[in-house]
Amino acid sequence: MNIIIINGPNLNLLGKRETDVYGTTSFELFFEELKKKYPALNLSFFQSNIEGELIDKIQEVGFTYDGIIINAAAYTHTSIGIGDALKAIATPVIEVHISNTFSRETFRHQSFISPNAKGIIIGFGLKSYELAIQSFL
Ligand code: DQA
Image 1 (cartoon, rainbow, N blue to C red):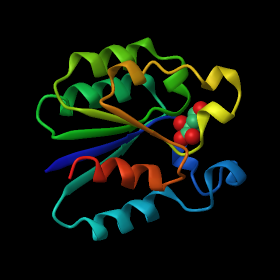
Image 2 (image 1 turned 135 degrees about the vertical axis):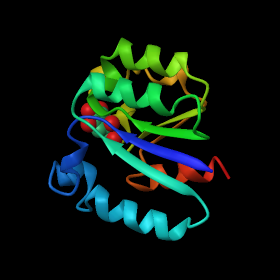
Image 3 (image 1 turned 60 degrees about the horizontal axis):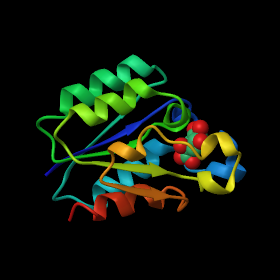
Image 4 (image 1 turned 45 degrees about the vertical axis):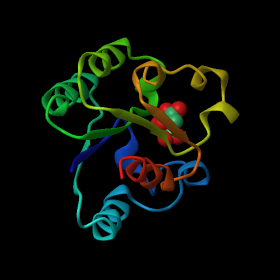
Protein backbone atom coordinates (compact mmCIF):
# COMPACT_ATOMS: atom_id res chain seq x y z
CA MET A 1 0.00 0.00 0.00
CA ASN A 2 1.48 3.34 -1.08
CA ILE A 3 0.79 6.09 1.43
CA ILE A 4 2.37 9.53 1.38
CA ILE A 5 2.56 12.10 4.15
CA ILE A 6 2.57 15.65 2.78
CA ASN A 7 3.62 18.43 5.15
CA GLY A 8 3.21 22.13 4.46
CA PRO A 9 5.08 25.27 5.50
CA ASN A 10 7.25 25.48 8.60
CA LEU A 11 6.75 21.81 9.45
CA ASN A 12 10.42 21.30 8.47
CA LEU A 13 11.10 23.09 11.77
CA LEU A 14 9.28 20.52 13.93
CA GLY A 15 11.29 19.87 17.06
CA LYS A 16 12.63 23.43 17.08
CA ARG A 17 9.51 25.45 16.37
CA GLU A 18 7.07 26.52 19.14
CA THR A 19 7.93 23.35 21.05
CA ASP A 20 5.19 24.03 23.63
CA VAL A 21 2.63 23.59 20.81
CA TYR A 22 4.34 21.15 18.42
CA GLY A 23 6.72 19.15 20.65
CA THR A 24 10.47 18.51 20.57
CA THR A 25 10.68 15.63 18.07
CA SER A 26 11.83 16.30 14.52
CA PHE A 27 9.58 14.93 11.79
CA GLU A 28 12.49 13.04 10.20
CA LEU A 29 13.08 11.09 13.43
CA PHE A 30 9.36 10.43 13.91
CA PHE A 31 9.04 9.28 10.28
CA GLU A 32 11.90 6.77 10.64
CA GLU A 33 10.13 5.25 13.67
CA LEU A 34 6.84 5.17 11.78
CA LYS A 35 8.43 3.29 8.86
CA LYS A 36 9.86 0.71 11.28
CA LYS A 37 6.47 0.28 12.94
CA TYR A 38 4.62 -0.30 9.65
CA PRO A 39 7.13 -2.24 7.49
CA ALA A 40 4.41 -3.68 5.27
CA LEU A 41 3.41 -0.22 4.06
CA ASN A 42 5.26 1.76 1.46
CA LEU A 43 5.36 5.05 3.36
CA SER A 44 6.83 8.18 1.81
CA PHE A 45 7.12 11.76 2.97
CA PHE A 46 7.22 15.15 1.24
CA GLN A 47 7.54 18.60 2.80
CA SER A 48 7.50 21.99 1.15
CA ASN A 49 7.14 25.59 2.19
CA ILE A 50 5.86 26.43 -1.29
CA GLU A 51 2.16 26.18 -2.15
CA GLY A 52 2.70 25.25 -5.83
CA GLU A 53 5.09 22.43 -4.92
CA LEU A 54 2.48 20.96 -2.60
CA ILE A 55 -0.11 21.15 -5.40
CA ASP A 56 2.34 19.53 -7.86
CA LYS A 57 2.94 16.65 -5.42
CA ILE A 58 -0.80 16.15 -4.82
CA GLN A 59 -1.37 15.95 -8.60
CA GLU A 60 1.62 13.61 -9.04
CA VAL A 61 0.48 11.00 -6.50
CA GLY A 62 -3.25 11.63 -6.51
CA PHE A 63 -4.24 9.08 -9.15
CA THR A 64 -1.94 6.19 -8.23
CA TYR A 65 -1.35 6.17 -4.46
CA ASP A 66 -3.65 4.47 -1.96
CA GLY A 67 -3.67 7.29 0.54
CA ILE A 68 -2.57 10.86 1.19
CA ILE A 69 -2.10 12.14 4.74
CA ILE A 70 -1.80 15.90 4.59
CA ASN A 71 -0.93 18.53 7.13
CA ALA A 72 -1.10 21.65 4.99
CA ALA A 73 -0.09 23.73 8.06
CA ALA A 74 -0.88 27.44 7.56
CA TYR A 75 -2.09 26.78 3.98
CA THR A 76 -4.94 24.81 5.55
CA HIS A 77 -6.56 28.11 6.41
CA THR A 78 -5.79 30.02 3.20
CA SER A 79 -5.25 27.80 0.17
CA ILE A 80 -8.15 27.37 -2.22
CA GLY A 81 -5.54 25.96 -4.65
CA ILE A 82 -4.61 23.06 -2.36
CA GLY A 83 -8.30 22.47 -1.60
CA ASP A 84 -9.08 22.34 -5.33
CA ALA A 85 -6.15 19.96 -5.99
CA LEU A 86 -7.42 17.57 -3.31
CA LYS A 87 -10.90 17.75 -4.82
CA ALA A 88 -9.52 16.93 -8.28
CA ILE A 89 -7.74 13.69 -7.39
CA ALA A 90 -8.91 10.12 -6.85
CA THR A 91 -6.74 9.08 -3.87
CA PRO A 92 -8.44 9.32 -0.45
CA VAL A 93 -7.12 12.11 1.76
CA ILE A 94 -6.85 12.30 5.54
CA GLU A 95 -6.28 15.78 6.99
CA VAL A 96 -4.14 15.89 10.11
CA HIS A 97 -3.01 18.57 12.53
CA ILE A 98 -0.61 18.24 15.41
CA SER A 99 -2.32 20.85 17.56
CA ASN A 100 -6.04 21.18 18.21
CA THR A 101 -6.69 23.99 15.77
CA PHE A 102 -10.16 24.55 17.25
CA SER A 103 -8.74 25.45 20.65
CA ARG A 104 -6.50 28.11 19.07
CA GLU A 105 -7.06 31.40 17.21
CA THR A 106 -10.30 31.65 15.22
CA PHE A 107 -8.39 32.00 11.91
CA ARG A 108 -7.27 28.39 12.46
CA HIS A 109 -10.88 27.17 12.64
CA GLN A 110 -11.37 27.44 8.87
CA SER A 111 -9.97 24.69 6.64
CA PHE A 112 -9.94 24.49 2.84
CA ILE A 113 -8.75 20.89 3.23
CA SER A 114 -11.60 19.43 5.34
CA PRO A 115 -14.36 19.53 2.67
CA ASN A 116 -12.10 17.43 0.41
CA ALA A 117 -10.91 14.95 3.05
CA LYS A 118 -12.28 11.52 3.85
CA GLY A 119 -11.51 12.14 7.52
CA ILE A 120 -9.80 14.55 9.88
CA ILE A 121 -7.50 13.85 12.83
CA ILE A 122 -6.62 16.87 14.92
CA GLY A 123 -4.83 17.56 18.18
CA PHE A 124 -3.00 14.34 19.09
CA GLY A 125 0.52 15.63 18.51
CA LEU A 126 2.61 13.60 16.07
CA LYS A 127 0.36 10.66 16.92
CA SER A 128 -2.24 12.28 14.63
CA TYR A 129 -0.17 10.98 11.69
CA GLU A 130 -0.08 7.45 13.05
CA LEU A 131 -3.84 7.46 13.66
CA ALA A 132 -4.27 8.54 10.05
CA ILE A 133 -2.12 5.62 8.88
CA GLN A 134 -4.21 3.24 10.95
CA SER A 135 -7.34 4.53 9.24
CA PHE A 136 -6.07 2.97 6.00
CA LEU A 137 -5.47 -0.50 7.54
C1 DQA B 1 -0.86 22.96 12.18
C2 DQA B 1 -1.86 24.01 12.64
C3 DQA B 1 -1.83 25.23 11.73
O1 DQA B 1 -2.77 26.19 12.17
C4 DQA B 1 -0.45 25.84 11.76
O2 DQA B 1 -0.37 26.92 10.85
C5 DQA B 1 0.65 24.87 11.52
C6 DQA B 1 0.55 23.52 12.09
C7 DQA B 1 -0.80 21.74 13.15
O3 DQA B 1 -0.34 20.70 12.73
O4 DQA B 1 -1.19 21.86 14.31
O5 DQA B 1 1.68 25.20 10.94
O6 DQA B 1 -1.26 22.47 10.92
